[in-house]
Image 1 (tube, one colour):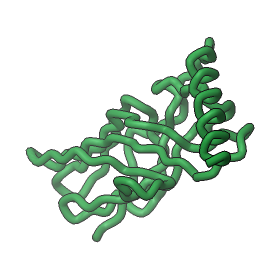
Image 2: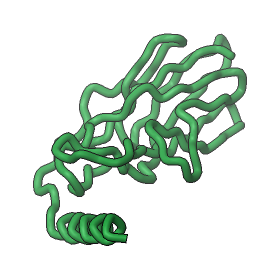
Image 3: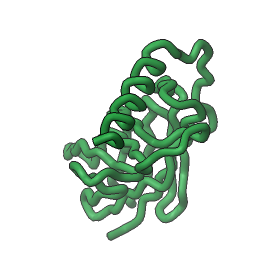
Length: 152
């Protein structure tokens, strides 16, 4: 019971600090790709689209959303690793699919770091930037993901 009470106090303190801190400057993502090649990792920035060619049809990928980022910041000792959930849209001709890819994990509602669409496997390798300070949200425009697309 004492441990549960201490954990509650720690959680309440963390929540209070998160409400009072904010990032004042943003560094927009740079260096994102506009095209990619199969089996070669590439970066893409939040809000961007990339295209790849499959002889006659283009597989487009759009980085639409950051649904959540609970990864443990560098300045904190965490009891779980946390997770980041990224929303992507895949387009192949007239077909479209939205999916969420995740890195890290919690036992509730586990997501995958990869998905299959129209004969392609799309895998998320990393998400940058990594949180530097506890409870300081990263602006969406700073997010950059590393993906690799391969044939199934």
